[in-house]
Image (tube, rainbow, N blue to C red; front, side, top):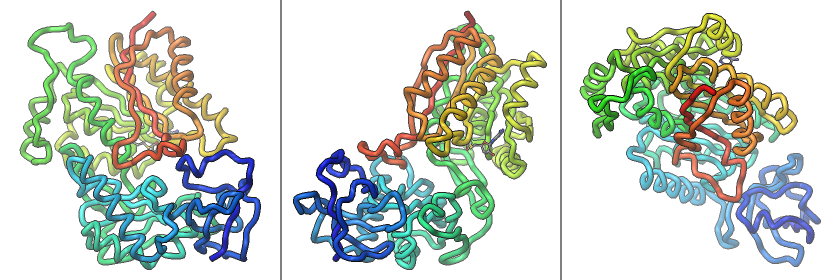
Length: 430
Ligand code: SAH
């Protein structure tokens, strides 16, 4: 087996648990490993550190597969990792039929992402290492996750950096275009073929549920003992409960909500379930809005929804000019900074939407805001919001700060895993 010897003077990142070796950290390569070949990684003294997959043309020269020098990287390796990943979900999630079952490096499977939508798994193969072993994937997922079908959506731009072309299609069983996902008692239609990424974003699932206490009552509602927030009934997954809740919760005391960058209505549907009186959904993607409409229909919420296909930056300005306000404003934009170099522009974007969003929040209402750019750190992002609040002459109370749901485990040594920032603020004028 070829060996990759690391330099003496380097940060001990690998020893801290970071699962990549950068090209710049390598002192010597003994042998002539090809793309995706298994190599042994040693420190400058020749001590074994890990076994991984080599890539001669990528900045990420080795992706770690195991820290055990005796472990063989075969189909059994994949099986063990998938089994461990699924066991992790079973421990921490109330239900595992709909979840992100495998989250790449964080589950010890570099470049493999799998979302489980009931009996169908949607996979993203994002590394040359996984690409070379792609025939193992579908049978193992069928076996361990218990799915009947596997659909591939490997169309992420990161594939290009690994020298791979996009690849899409049905790998196993029958793959319908649209599948149904249950989340916190709500039904979502997911377009696995033409939706964004794999069609549904599980990372915000727990954050969507976190808005329950703020949408139950409008900001104008004076505190009254009979208007207490109550936990939604436990067994949310039963359809009858949903309809009952939707009926009791859709009341005139409920909040008006603006769900900006709504995609297929993830936050909007939750707001309606938890008692919002009306939700405005804004997204620039016609396709996303079409699916959002289907989702409103599926949950019996259509009469409390207004759909707008528009650029959020323009639409926020329009509402400001119209003097329109909302009890709750939700901002969940796409990653504005997709590369390190794009951070500055991204920060301007985050500041602008948060500034405009804050101006639309009714007195005593709430701003729900998020960022999924991992190049923008939580500290920098919070500064941007503080900045926007200052310009908008608002005082913010941080109700809750959160990150991605538990089916997106975070390798503590890998800052890339800490990409999702989510906060709920109570907004007061100054
Ligand atoms: N909140 C959603 C996820 C949002 S993903 C959920 O819970 O599922 C980001 C969304 O922003 C995408 O649907 C994308 O179509 C939309 N988007 C991107 N740029 C936009 C813009 N300038 N104006 C409005 N929407 C935009």
